[in-house]
Length: 505
Ligand SMILES: [Zn+2]
Picture 1 (tube, rainbow, N blue to C red):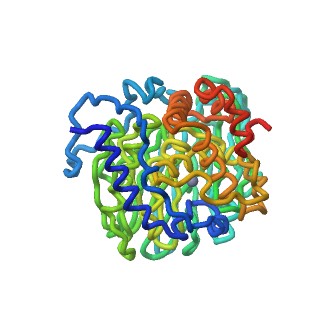
Picture 2 (picture 1 turned 30 degrees about the horizontal axis):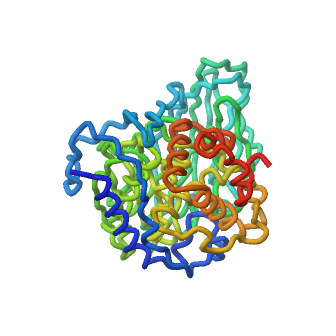
Picture 3 (picture 1 turned 90 degrees about the vertical axis):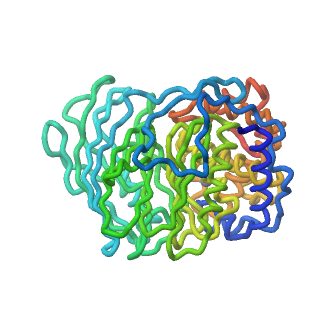
């Protein structure tokens, strides 16, 4: 039997146990390494703040939860479908279903860790909701940070139903394919292509390779379509950060690796090396030899959580698993359903902090502390509720920091905001270019602290639950955040502006 008090007790115990482990390196949260170094690590979180005192009642479960100590029957992987919960937290209602006309990616990848290459073929079936005359692809491995480390993604051929096409490279991360005629809303088109990726040697990024492991995040050419708006062509960032926008899509990816490499990726392996996930806005892969543990989280529907720690890393896989399950369950009670049936989590070498992808998390050694709850928070803010990470990084990083701070018991205002970032929390990534040392505290902490200071945690949580229920599977803009908060905080714009988060300024 589960009860909210028990969940809160577990949250307290885990948070209390983890609070003593907070070290400077662990403050690195998957973004700019130099900014991470500037984040002061001397404060000790107060464990009592870790427990949400007014946690909303969890949704009554329609079925008996599986025994979390028993791994699921591997012959019966969960169906990778979204199941809306009957009722969200705070009475906000169930999650909306993802758009039925979302893109469909089907890919086959051959990964060669000894040569640090990935060779792939892919089709993407896409139907816009606005008339278009071109297809745009983002080639994120060619962004400044991975490219400087040696990454290179090349499209080797491309074909539309009308015949072969030659993508035009507008920038290193932007490729354009002209259409022979306008594609109208309701029409669909299938693009086929081949591509090759060279992965950097041991780069502290989403792309890194060595003989015995590879991190492969955002490696597939992806359509940056914002429904109702159009193509997102925001510039790439040179910081340890993202400028990504992509709609949720269905993925079916066959992943071929040499014998004796394990694979952890977005979605669920069907037993043949083909991974499938529905309504996910990106796809990521970690390979290597992992010590793997597994459990079922109730979020509130069953979620198979798999944690793999690379064989060269001494961290305790079970400790990560316990924290991922606990934070996932707590966040789902506070913010809404985690609608996917799986979450995979890989700890690999030479990474500080962590990097979030839909249903797959990458973290480095010794990141059991705040990094883990932060990346799990991103499953709700970035993965479920998307945003333009180039124009509005505060929407995913700032709200996720609030989730992290409240889970970890981080005291509001417990460290300083960089002077050049005070009042600048909502600035785009182009503003932070050249201000990398201010980025973390200004965007992450300033927004997280502002939400903590906005009102009682239960009220802020309910406003965020409304934000999730109104924007799940979509791409939220700052005005969507305001619309979700105003019923609870009518003066949210003025209050947050006074706390450094200036919306629409
Ligand atoms: Zn983050």
